[in-house]
Length: 369
Ligand SMILES: Cc1ncc(COP(=O)(O)O)c(C=O)c1O
Image (cartoon, protein in one colour):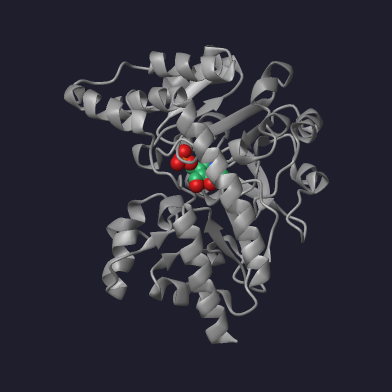
């Protein structure tokens, strides 16, 4: 007998997450000294100087376990966002909260979860691993959200409905009022999970985020990450804000120390560093307008974006453009794994990174033409 036959079928059939390529990989493959990565929507300014100072200091304590439940971090997040701390579940990236939500809420072989197509792939991957059916409603041609199609997929066994706002990979965003309307129309078991990984970049954030409205939305949870605006992708920190009864159960079943000591310290420092946060926002919003205009000038079709990336359709074969950019040391994101082989996604970088991308793209498209 093949010992692999003893594994769960969900594991045998699993296709792993496909991450953005790393700088080291491309440096080696193409023998390049300088590589620019605009593939994973990281912070163009790096990490906050305050965070780096705090990390250096806290590194003395890494032989200690963090405090179980990360109460100081939870308090800091709750204060920053004006949310009841009993609603907050910190996680090893918001990925961990997505996984926990599925494992806590969706019954394998019985329940289903619903999202748009395409969507952030972790929803589908973790549902698969949990043995939970995933139903997806295609986005409209312009990437706007057909909520009626989403609702048509829901039934009495719908455990979770994921909506990413602003969306990844399109950058499309809806106002919070529309999400409140959707929540009210869901069947009784269903929880609406609004993934706000990029909401700080939306203009204005307050009109797009449901985080401040949870008291009037009993069947809504919000996901936030420190990987984007706060520049902590490598430390893995995110949180969910959800009904208190649900937070209680997630906290009971999560692994006790999944948010490590340095991530906890860095998260608190990041929330304190207003200067860095505002500078990051400004850099992204300016860079986004610049890249959108330049992509149009170069004959690409960029989608309007409220996030820290832009989806665009190049005038020639997207895979060819992606590879030609790689050879010039620029990593962006091909979207074939999202089922969009004609499209590419570029993260907003620093000014020099954005200019280098535009120059390389101009060369590539010139060569193609
Ligand atoms: C929509 C969305 N949700 C969640 C995440 C995961 O974030 P984290 O790094 O906090 O796990 C990402 C990361 O790219 C994302 O795009």
